[in-house]
Image (cartoon, helix red, strand yellow):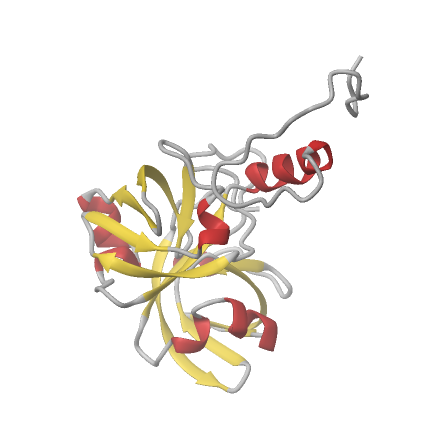
Amino acid sequence: MFTGIVEELGSVASLDGPRLTLRAERVLTDVTEGASIAVNGCCLTVVEWGTDWWRADVSDETFARTSLGSLRVGDPVNLERPVRLEDRLGGHLVQGHVDGVGTVDEPAPDLRVRAPRALLRYVVEKGSITVDGVSLTVVDVLDDAFTVAVIPHTAQVTTLGHRSPGDAVNLEVDVVAKYVERLLGGYAPAGTEHTGDVDVVVDADAEVPGGT
């Protein structure tokens, strides 16, 4: 579990088939074999490391569902270690499980990202969303996109300051919204499609799980 607060801006050292090697320093101070590190919001497992580098194996599924396959040597990447129980939760709860890939329409500071409609139903004004592993607050939700305000510090210490129109970015929506939809979906009328804003009709006599 992560918080979406990027610890370090690393870079791609090499990409050899499924094996990704990254340059880093700060996130390696307490690294162990099998440890998790989020790369542009995608949770990867450390299989090897040295003084200023670490290596992970990336599955075909991960390449297919994220923007990691488009990385090139020298590209900057956002890095974050998992949250510890004693840490402050400065962002929001992030799993490091990318839900989809969006496209930058407008760069920072007024970042606008075009997103799949299937994900936009989980995005709400002033809610949280993760873009390339960065926890951000949604400013506005549009028909096919959302906007966020990127402060100068965030633009400087993350990849968001390097993104241009047309660039792909990893997106992870708030997992709480997905669980709520899943739980309430059983009470929706038969044939209801879960697209856009859904009005869920609940039978007043129905037994609610966990209710009294």
